[in-house]
Image (spheres, rainbow, N blue to C red):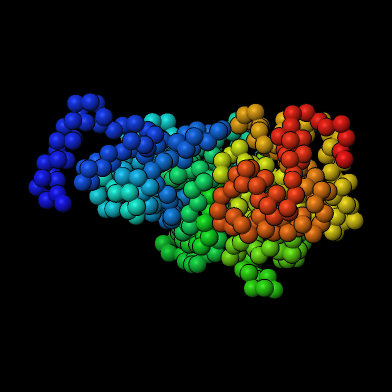
Length: 473
Ligand code: TRP
Ligand code: ZN
């Protein structure tokens, strides 16, 4: 037993010793923390060492909830935001980082006490007035403002905050969400969200999940959007502008909210009306739908360069609203959104499954067996540039091998194990990691376990092998 006074004396002595040997914290690896009677935490890591984006995300805490309160003025392009981030410390913390690109931080507090803020690149370092104990739940509030940036990705595609003719659209894969709110922007840290959006009256704001309220006062309309299930930050979206919205429910009672730019609404309506039917078909193949709402956002072609599987409510530029891409983005709700990649290297677990869903659609609705799409993919040279498990760099994350060759891996498993075991694997995988994260190694281990087959030949040749095999079979 150490009494309070000698404990304090010991702590002072240890702290002095640490100063002498130069161990006063400041390392960014989150390790080597010294905790003598709660004397000192260490800074959380500035990145999670993702293979492609080492600085993305931050160590030392897990976010459980984001409450974002955002006001956007389309005329000036100015965003005024408050982010309230609830997190649990995974180490004793003297400081921790958030990712934020651009914008101005107006104030920051932790548990109601002012916190100091340092900025370097996209890293925000917050130093609370007191250390945070490992295991403690703490709340960080950041007020920020400015014109959010559009980010051009490594492959030249645009993400982040995209101004549109009548508003703006937020797209976050892989790194764009840090352009509009501070957070732990790595897919491994999923959280629930409440997003409150205030826009000029006559303009609408759409986001993920369920709209729990909407009211207009003093010339501004405020809507509140609730995501009850965990979401990776790259799947959060906001669409501001004029929209034709449709609210309904599927036969099983799932709320549906679609929003289409008025200029594309009539043309989009027939396909959007198929969402309940397509989801019911996917539930048969993939198991229970993971979220408590669904829908879509359809924009003009110039507003977005590609479709994205934003959670519960995927985004489509008009020309991308085809049945194949609709099937693809809905399939991502299971594969990518509920079962989320552990790192960006595991991206084929998103895209291979979503493309395979397109092949299943062709098989079930268009009498084209998946084998036909498999052979066509085999024949295309672009699919053989690299193995799906190992994109050479961040600019290759959206390249054909991740998509088509990822789907080929699944088809090879199906050829070997047969339909019964294969469909058990699809829904089993979605169930095993529901609302979680998973890696390529998790998948290969799970596939062998659940099918009872040695699948090394599939992994060696189709998942990990360099170059094209001699033949498709
Ligand atoms: N992941 C998206 C999908 O498959 C597509 C996507 C997101 C994309 N960002 C991109 C495609 C950048 C090309 C370039 O639905
Ligand atoms: Zn996809």
